[in-house]
Each structure stands twice: as structure tokens, then as C-alpha cells.
Length: 114
Length: 114
Picture 1 (tube, each protein chain N blue to C red):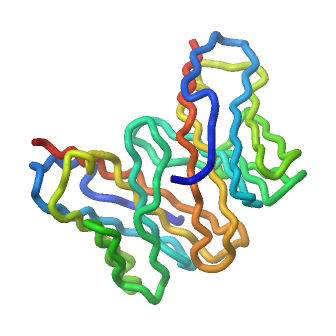
Picture 2: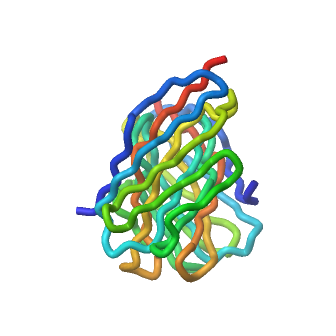
């Protein structure tokens, strides 16, 4: 089991609220990622980071923002949640260079916006 | 367009039986192919990773094969157990960036009945 943690695991919140999804890893990995996954669908990359002070947008456009002030911490923030943001959010990290570059995933946060 | 297609979409088998899941991809240039297991409400966990030069890899009762010429992979599960019930996701990585971009299939939902 990889040492990557996400909190909260489940969140139900009303429209317009600001939320922050936490992601932490204790493996010292430089690269971290946020994915969005709807039921029965593939994972979509929404944000990634090569290291401290590095953040990039992924393939899927998202109204969320991220920050990377510390290596181990990569929080995702929604300033004003909407029902369209309802989804599962998965955080991942990787470190090894070369052909494998395996990504380790956290358990995910299931977000429901009413 | 880089794509990963999996079949079947869902599969039900009896405990103790074997099954094979399929993955076809068009990702280029190819770096590696991974199979992940994702339990309901959890993050994906890596089962196998294969590079271009590897055509088979085993992890316990899981055996993955790769045909890089036809761009096809399969995951064979032997003597299935109830705990094998999960979504199995085929993921292909390209060599086009230092990020090691991942392309996800939608998964095969496997249900093992007693």
C-alpha cells in the first residue's frame, strides 16, 4: 500500500461553498497529480506538479486550483462549488525516472455538491 | 488521437473460474502499459507494468501479456476469488514528455459470484 493520503474521503456540500481537498504523500515524490473520475468513466488529469512551486493544468479543463508549497502536500481548491463538480477526485504521486515512472494513487475523495 | 479501449465493459464469473480481459491502444510513442485494480470507492492499485521489450508479466494469479506490434494487451486472472471483484483499468504511458503522460481505459468491471 502506497503512503499517499486524501482527506476527506467523502464530502457533501452546498452550492457556492469553498472547499479544499487535501492530498499528502510521505514518499518524498517530486511529481504529484490530481485526476477526476466519474462513474464508469476513465480518469482525467486535471492538475499536475513537477515539484515545489510548480503547478500545471492537465488535459481536462477544471475550475479548481492547486498549490505546491511543500513536497509532500498538494491541495486542490474549489472557490465556489457547483453540482457539476460532483465527482471522485484522485491524487497520485510518482518519483522514479525511466520507463516505469509508476504512479501511486490515494484512496480518493468522493465530492457531492447539492 | 491517443486512445485506450477495453473489453468487455463488464464481466460476471463464478468463484474459482479463470477470465481474460482485453486492452487495445493507439498511444504513440509507447513507453509502458500498466494494469491497475480499482476497488469500489478506492484509488487504483498497480498490478503489472510492462515496457516495449516485455511480452508477459505475472503478479500472483494475475498474468498480463503485451503484443506491441498489434498494440494489444490482456490480463488473465486464474482461479478467481470474491476479492477479485473490482474494476480493472488498462493504462498506457507515452514517451512524449518528461511527465510520462498516462492514457486510461474506462476499465472492465469484474464481478465474482460465490
